[in-house]
Length: 305
Image 1 (cartoon, rainbow, N blue to C red):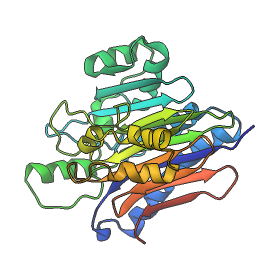
Image 2 (cartoon, one colour):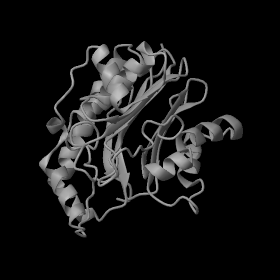
Image 3 (tube, rainbow, N blue to C red):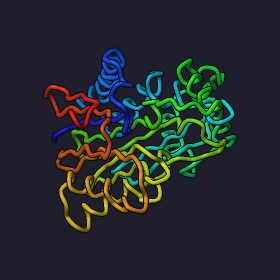
């Protein structure tokens, strides 16, 4: 059995450090730790990378501190619309969903799309109908709405100049299991105040996530529009495959690709088939955690401290 590694993130953003209190920082780290453990325990007992990334992301979707599932950002109409994708590096199969308003764990539905549907991407009403056909229970939309997100939505409607450090907290995970398989999963509530129907990078293959056993697995976060247009996750793959760059240099290159034309926040976690890892961003906050086999976990949210 080979090396196994678990990496997760819950958002990259440039923000005033004073907006994240010590209490908030500690709560975020606890949330990251719980999600990391959920995935790591599966890898530790010989489980698959796909199961591990799904479990880690579900943990963050259930935690209202993170912008995915419960706690997702409100769109301009005061609704929470979520999206997610995951990809299996062994088979190159994937599942993606978007425009969800009543699905507790979007990444779970993405997994069902991958395994039980002839398509690879379902959206809105069709995704909800498929969820029901697979026995998932729909949640009342109120489940996803927290007081904090409601206040941020009110600030937007009133055009208040208030800085919110949670604006781009897409969550994601990549893993290498003991069988040599890679996988990625990414999930988000999008950006606050978005138009109804806006789709971000988290459900886009090659944008928010990409996995291939031969090359790498990557999950992205930040400004979804530019991450899609720069194909950031696939850029990590391309730089590894064709330029033979290390995973760290490939991720760095993807953070910087077309940065002059596509300006905004980018954060990327990635792993190669040997278990080498990358955690790169152009932001001062990048919430990230990893654990390599039985080593002590690494958990941090600051990039410049």
